[in-house]
Length: 113
Image 1: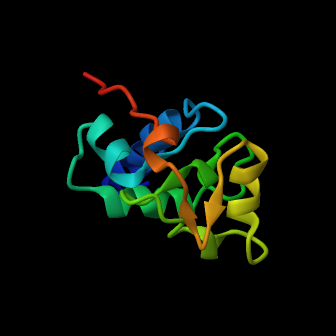
Image 2 (image 1 turned 120 degrees about the vertical axis):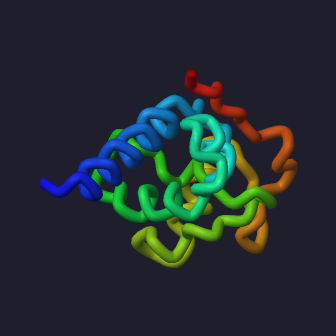
C-alpha cells in the first residue's frame, strides 16, 4: 500500500467515525466533519469519503449535507429520492432537496484533539 493510499484510508476512517456518531434525526455538514477531524479545508474530501461509503451499512451517509442543508449527495444514493426518504423516516422534513429547519436538525461534531 502506498503512503498516499494509507493517508486517504486513515482520513476516510476518521470521517466514518464521526458520521457513525450522528444521532438519528440529526444532520451535519461536510465542513463540520472536516473541522472536527482537524482538516478544516477538506470538506470536499469528506464528500469523497461519503461517496465511497455506500456499501457500508453502519455509515449513515444520508445524514451528511452541505453547509446550507442541501442534499448535495443525493445523486449517489439508489433511487431518485432515497436520501430524502431516509431523512424523513427519521423526522427530518425535506422539501426540494432542502432540509426544513436546518438549524434545529444540525448536529455539531466534537473536535478531536
